[in-house]
Image (cartoon, rainbow, N blue to C red; front, side, top):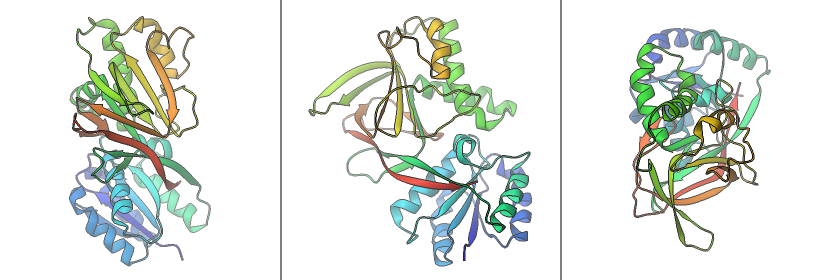
Length: 314
């Protein structure tokens, strides 16, 4: 028999105002709830759910909560069989839920409608590849869905300071960060120094230096606002886009980038997109992974690969 549990991260931005409504809905469907005070409490909640044979896990939080729960579940092996996830947008950034989570007038309404469908066996299962990020060969992977570096890191900081404080829709955070970066770069002077210098490990083992303004990658199938700045070919499930420094004719390239519909001249000008299953590189600057800022070691290879998947119910 399918058993459903729910984790509510009380520190996630939106959850502070909706937690009671979610708990009320959950009680009507005999869902096992765990309200945690930050992601440090995740291991205990997951261990309890595993003991109770939970196989469907509702996660109410932002992208960071989703990332932490999936990473802990995979790396620590709490469950003999990987659970199905249900993503509820409850945080400062909710890009994962925007692609494969519940949608509705409110999270409580969306949850109520989902549990009604679940009780009738009418849910839909979506499978998504996971980006596994190893900050070095000696560290366990962190699993998530969207990574951005270079000017994307600066754009995220700007978005948090200027947009989140206005109460703007949180699921739009990545799209607004990318669009905001492009608009500011078009309107302002070009920076003298590249936002990101990285060394990419080639197939023959050598390191190739690249000076970039932007690097973004995802395994999601959609973002928000119709923005999806990926268009490259390849057999992998990881979509990657980079923008060289200095930027050329950005005012003309901006809209094709946002829509993922490049003009023929753009690759020659340094706007490159492709698909792969693994990257090995060395970064000299922080990057953003599902809303969380991480700091690489510039002297060790960071390994980015796709080897596992997560299943979501909607």
